[in-house]
Amino acid sequence: MTEHDHIKLPEGSIEKTTTTINLGPTHPATHGVFQNILELDGERIVSAEQTVGYIHRAFEKLAERRPLYQVTPLTDRLNYCSSPINNMGWHITCEKLLHIKTPKRVDYLRVIIMELARISDHLICNSIVGVDTGAYTGFLYVMQYRELIYEIYEEICGSRLTTNIGRIGGFERNFNDIAFQKLDKFLAEYPKVLKEFIDLFERNRIFIERTQNTGAISADRALNYSFTGPNLRAAGVDYDVRIHTPYASYEDFQFNVPIGTTGDNFDRWQVRNDEMWESLSIIEQAYRKVQEFKGAEAEVFHADVPEYYLPEKEDVYTKMEALIWHFKIIMGETKIPVGEVYSCVEGANGEVGFYLISDGGRTPYRLHFRRPCFIYYQAFEEMTKGSMMSDAIITLSSLNLIAGEMDA
Amino acid sequence: MSLTNDRVKQRVIEKFGEQVTAFSEPYGMLTFEAPKEMNLKVLNFLYDDEELKFRFLTDLQAVHYPDEKGRELAVVYHLHNLVDNVRIRFKVFTDISTPDVYTATGLFSGANWMERETYDFFGVNFVGHPNLKRILNVDEMDYFPLRKEYPLEDQTRIDKDDEMFGRG
Image (cartoon, rainbow over all chains, first blue to last red; front, side, top):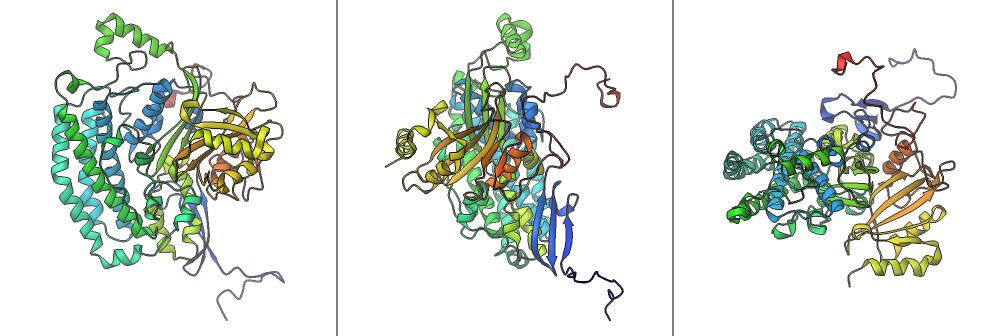
């Protein structure tokens, strides 16, 4: 006699022996609004079906009514853990379309910001992997350095999370002294913290055993699934947009592309850590290059393109020419070339691409965001099939799925 | 020997002759198109050819051109040869009344959701797709929102009570 004996099944029916579990959309371990319908046999996953789209905001449609400079705030809200990279990616796309060449100093400042954003993104991802394996300390410890990065953003653009940083052609203002002081502080203190953070986990047997050999994907499969970024590199493919298609003068910097071998959760975690070291080195190199500019060159923070670069407000009120350009840009009277551009940057999650079609109007005719999260989340079922439910949770966080980027 | 756009063009023309058309290089990326029935043949050739090796699908999306009668929808593939680091763009056009295009999921697992997204927003029917249903929009939706006939709401409209949202 089992407890279900009173249930009378219709004749000929087969009793369902698996359990259906809804992981999400509001489960704390999904770290975002998306759902997994897991079919479990005991604690093993038989199949997983993902549902996304809970925070879809139709950015591609919205962008069709916005002039180029108004699309930037939309890109903030894709991967909001590293919005500056998306912002810069969008500016670089527009600059490609408009044939704008940015000065070296602008490029280097952009590199500093983008690498800071990469660090803050990886920091969140890796510490969340820690949280999901039961180690909360690392997460709380590194949070103060993300805070410091946000303070640097704040000095540059005034906001912290959805940064809307920069303009087409450069930055809205030059970096002030406080920004550089905070950057100095970050560069001085962060290596020690990162070292400690890594030691905290690498010497923790529970963490190692829970991440190694779980959620693995082979290089072939990862490529076939169009993986990019740290998740592809963890599988052993050294594809990095910064090397393959350099933008913002990345070719001027020396850095390594860390790769893993097995593509499991631990390798992804490891690759992200190594990338943070490389990012630190890139920031230092860029900072040194920025300091080398002397005289008038040291004040350059945007390209000389008055027809696309929004002038400073003070100039708009006091100078005739700036007022005219301001008017022309806002009213959409500057000439936008006809053409189609695909431009991409190495986002914290992988290749963030912008496919922009312009018909000569002031707004994009069509804009498509290549969102790395969206593309690699579909591999989740393959990566977790047959594994334990608790491994799936870690896989979910180590893939660094950001709902905002997935749903656009 | 590094692969160039000219070489890709030459190889594709050698194989498909007159059927591949509209070669251009907007902003340095080789772009061409083929009849929609040929999309898998071309993708397979680009994938398998020992010299071309376009084995990475960067992105897949559609574009709606309402004014081009008979070829209103374009399905655009961005492909990447990671060995020689060459990117190309390949398009197929379809009319909007029978928007059937063969699926690329057999070749690229990653095309699965990209095609679902394209279906969701443009209604391109990917023939042979294992699970072609809406992905970002609600399942009950009965139109394809990114087509040009669906404009965004007029921002100047006054018939709507928006007091709660600060526009009233």
